[in-house]
Image (cartoon, rainbow, N blue to C red):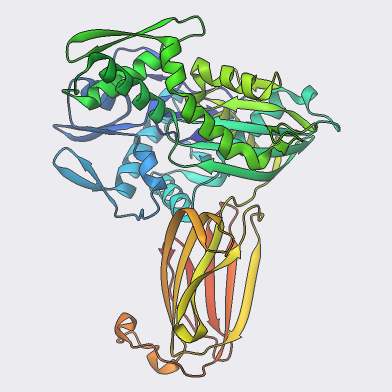
Length: 495
């Protein structure tokens, strides 16, 4: 069985490859009603941690629970052991995500009555996700029993769904689509060029801390301000705000929320105006993907087929309305806003569809190095944004110390002096003994004093995997000794 899975911040959707069709799989809740998603939520029950609709029911009843845990994967300092507090327990983030994906796998088998088939899957990932986030997501799917065919950036998957659905709108004159992907916890935008079934990502931008959750927070705080009180239970108010937000339709005029037992009514217009700053932030994120006119305004280029609106967060009526007011009429909203990525991922999983994709990195990757004889530290950008997956970069030099201490990081942007700015994601450290006398497992390299001495010829080699994970191999070219790391995991050194 081949699938496309969009592991979402608030909802996870699954599309099935079925003889050229890519239907979303429906899952029943505890009352037997079917939904084309599984809530991305975990809760603590007497029997342990439960997920999905069972967790949602318990959370509504006041049980300890955690929502939007996918958003925690975007933290710059996340590791497999990063704890997530659930009631009185601390659960490593990798274990929590793996447990949820076990639940997804069991739900897929039950809903499709396919209990023995292997689950082969193409997985979605935010375009702006750093290497550790990609590695942990990939590892959780593998531990949950999925055979991961590939990992594709979510806006790129939506590009597949767009050209599959709107093939006549993509032509030689307008061969590009800009995907506007506002999910529950992240925002991504990508320019995808399509020539028939061949797709290439030209550029991507994103914000890992902006999504539908933030629109829920705006509504909850607006209701509190209206009531003039502090919330007795802010988590419950956020849940109610989400439900009220998702119930809005274009003709809605008022929103009703209960705050500490008091009913509060808000004009929809007032809420939408309070969301303007969030909308403006998505526009600013997109600016590098647009064309600037003579008046300094950013607009879609003439070669753009359209701005394709996807993601569960974009179902809010003011999102499409705001895009049309800002960019004009060339806005197209997917009929499966929350399922577009899963459908595109299923298309990518279908060998008969013959769709191809050339992905790109959306962040700077580099290493902090000592310069001027150790008097200062600077960031050396090794791989720049828009580098294609499969890119290999290497450099060689004569070691000038007894020990190399490499501190890897990814960042969103660089300033005029080439130093990281914006979100910085440390990707770990690697110690490489230039001095052969230090290459013993009995030596704690962290306690070795670093001093200058001429050493062997060293090569650093960096590779972007098809899943967007960066690996590094540092080698002593004279002896053959090396240390290799896929950033997010460590591999053995060897001769």
